[in-house]
Amino acid sequence: MTGQKQSRVDLLEKKIEALIRVVQQLLDENAYLKDLSVGTLETIKLMPNYEEAIERYKQKIRELD
Image (tube, rainbow, N blue to C red; front, side, top):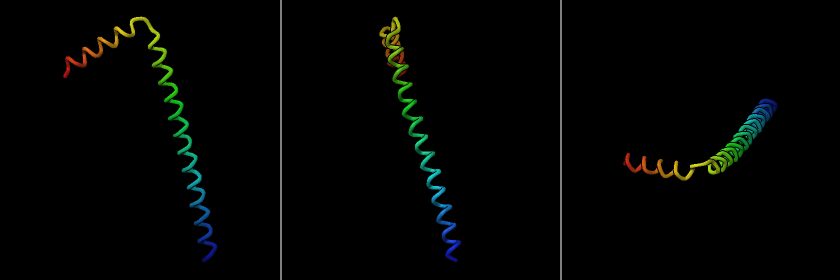
């Protein structure tokens, strides 16, 4: 009976370790996507007519309300 309990505990430990690896991968990907989106936004801000495009977009949103 003890062998079965130990094998079940071993299996659960492996599953927990696998879940921890998956969560860590998700956290890493989330951080990467955050950096990518911030970099993209900062690049777009440097483009010509950025302010004008933002103002037109704001006006368009106001018209929809």
